Amino acid sequence: MLIIAATTKCNLRCVMCPHAMGRVHVYQDIAQICMDRLEAPLKLAERVDITGVGEPLLSKTFWSFIKTHKKQPGQYIRLNSNGLLLTEENAPIIANSAASEISISFDASQTTTYKKIRGGNFERAKQGVKALVEARNRVPDSKLDIYINMTLMKENVSELEGLVRIGKELGVDRVVAYQLFSFGDSPVWVVERGDWTFKYSEQMLKHYPEYAAESIRAAVKTSKEIGMRLDLLCKTKEYIENQANCSA
Figure 1 (cartoon, rainbow, N blue to C red):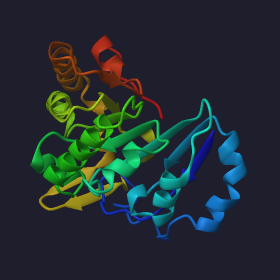
Figure 2: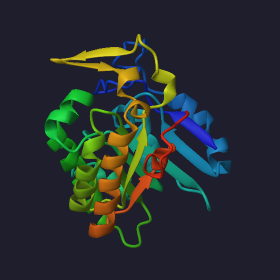
Figure 3: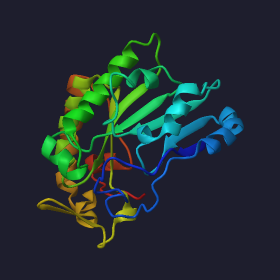
Figure 4: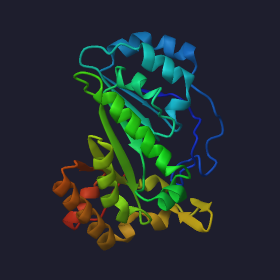
């Protein structure tokens, strides 16, 4: 596996991310010379993750890679994004690339909640995903897996069902849900967002197992009814199996 952090720059300050806490002190893209030196490892890697603490689509090096890299036999390439920079012009570049999977973070199904948690434009994110799905669907025999995800917490867990419906509306392949990792379970992780105060420790689902279970069950039920795949990761499924515990 080869993990490449395309950039530490980001156009959002999501409350559960180190960016919101001011813990990212250097803003830069991975240098092109570094990518050039990875040419041999890239040919050998079975899995390549283009990830990191920033938004990859902000990186010129990312776009250079995605335009030129030829996937090796059996190679799996995963991308992540917040979707805000996806457009009708650049979505086809990703759709026609060697990418196998792209995960797009939403963390809400309502405009107000999205604004609180991620601080961005909810409708713009949906438009970006729609553009990518449409571009992918125009590629014959495309194997690109497009999905949207939600990091579950007290503030948004009731909106998972709504995100399942949005996934169906946008035509993505699946919706993925996990929960806040325990690394942020600290009283010092506090972010002020307008009239809302995000306290990481108080938002973790382990404090609200019954509420979490009710919301997740509703989302699972809807996913089956409308035929929208829902994957529950990071022991999230245990909330509907009466075991509310997740470790990073």
